[in-house]
Length: 201
Picture 1 (cartoon, one colour):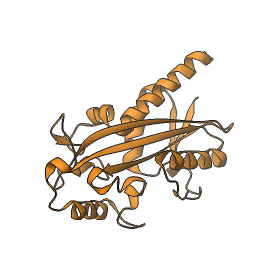
Picture 2 (cartoon, rainbow, N blue to C red):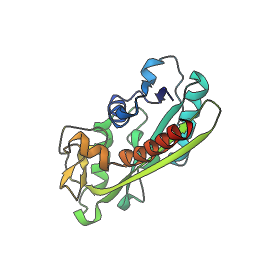
Picture 3 (cartoon, rainbow, N blue to C red):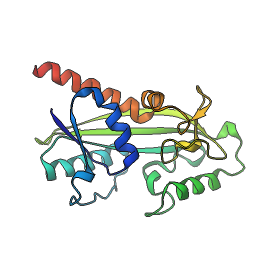
Picture 4 (cartoon, rainbow, N blue to C red):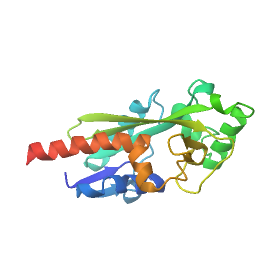
C-alpha cells in the first residue's frame, strides 16, 4: 500500500492521523484533495456503522484504500450521550464551542465523581476490492466543569485524563497519540498494516 486516503476534512484529525502513520512510508491523502466527493450522511446507530459507511463511499469514489473513523464521547451520567451525535450535539451546524457549552449545561451541578466518561473510536479500513476491517480504541476520563488547554479539538479541553491530571487539550501530541481512543485504534491498524506488508513482501 503506497497511498492511503483519510476520509476526513477535519484539520485536527488529519494532523493527528498523519503523525500516527508517519513511519509507515505511505502517501497520505485527505478529503481536501477530493473536494468534489459528496458528503456522507452519518446515520448509523454505532461508530462502526458510520466509519464503514464513510470509508466505503470514499473508496468507491476514488479507487484508493481508505480509512475513516467515527469517534465520540460517552458520558455515563447522560446514559452514553452524546455518543454517535458527538460532532453535532448542539445541532447539525454546531461547532466545538457550542457542543462543549451544551455538555457543560447538561452536567451543571453534578459532582466530579459522577462526571465519568469515555472517548471511543472505531476506524474502518476499506480496500478497492470491497473488503473492510475495523479497529477500536477507548480512553476513560472525567468531564471538567470548565475547559482547560488550547490543544486538540472537540471535547478535548473538557476531558481530563486521571493518570496525567491534565485534559487531552493540555497533553503533548506524542502522549495524546499514544493514549487516546483514536491513538489506540490506530495502533491496532498500524499493527495490521505492518503484518500485511510482511506477508506481501
